[in-house]
Length: 502
Ligand SMILES: Nc1ncnc2c1ncn2[C@@H]1O[C@H](COP(=O)(O)OP(=O)(O)OP(=O)(O)O)[C@@H](O)[C@H]1O
Image 1: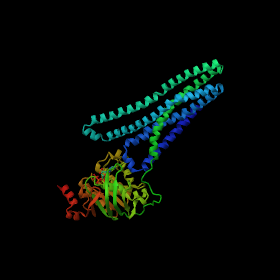
Image 2: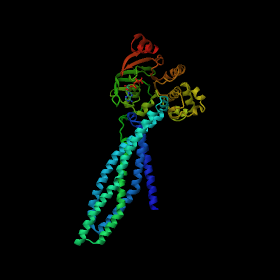
Image 3: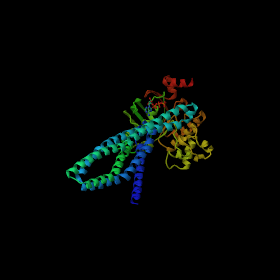
Image 4: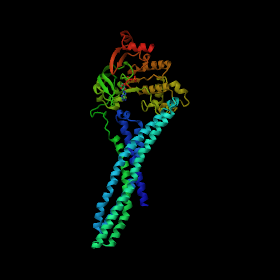
């Protein structure tokens, strides 16, 4: 009964520790650098939460339930043996570690190989989620065989790596059998000699061997436990990689809250290269005054979205500075800095919840009336009312139940509700038809009057009305002016417009 009680207590303890580890891992990733999250496969992270944590749980439970019992038995047996025949016990104490040497070496190999296997599970998880998310393209392009082959390769590799770990673990018992057998032969010889010399008696010897027989299964269990512990250790290494990572972008100790921002934005000679080495900005300087609407245009890869990434301080520039209202954004706390901006990104990301809940994320605690007012301003109200559940309709995973244009309008409503002094629109209306876009534009013009608005758009009709248009190329500013001025100047902007009209 006490064993039952101990097992229950261990199970609960391990389970609680696992919940804490999972929550801490999630907190660390969510609060950590954006660069880290965007640099690894999503499946890699998912597997750290599921597979690594499972391995930790297994190891934790086995260690908690078997280690104490095993160690206590071995200590008790050792004391008895020392009393009965200390010389033979000392010989055994020298021989046993020799037998355990290979088991420990094997344990280290298990650790290395488990780490490799766990990493590969992450790759398989990414492959699976990518494959299910892209099922439309897979069907439309007849890529079923291609995907099946990729998945099969992943599964085969998974089983190959898993088998290696199992093979190592399986070798523990035979090693213990062989070394144990050899040790026994030696001990028998030694004892026969000592009995002949009159140094010990057969009775003592039988007593010691009896004690070894009691301890042997526990020792063997401790041997396999080592392999399990190493597997758990490999998982723990991966979990702690996440927990211990220090974010490179964090609040300075003297950071202050940005409150009452007027929304002036300034980039001064900003140079930036992504962590993978892709150059993005090389000496970009521009400013946007509070309340001004500034459009960023230019060829794909010119660095437009990067401007938003730096303004939100998802990354820090290599050189130069980004300022709001004349103060370097690194002097502000990250939370307050991001509250000053409302971003609508190209992919209009929605969460698997209702439409109302998705809009409300713009400002936690907003009332239903405020949510509806924001939806009206984003020209979303009418389509929302045509849905069976109205504002309470579920949008599906990543907003899959809505059309691209509908998703964008819900995302716009969320940004409008945020009521921030800086509005960042990155191809925010690209999925709308011309009529809907025009309607959204009218509403946005009204809303943007008191806000600094930065607009990225390829469709140049969207940016015509901006107070100023910045033309970027290769991470630099190449032209600047109103639509009319730039058309007259006959430079890069005019070429872009003519290309779109032709
Ligand atoms: N997360 C990232 N990691 C690595 N490189 C990136 C990342 N995002 C962008 N880049 C690179 O930085 C450069 C600028 O990209 P950016 O997205 O800012 O261009 P853009 O002008 O917004 O292009 P588009 O109009 O196609 O959206 C590109 O060469 C791109 O490959």
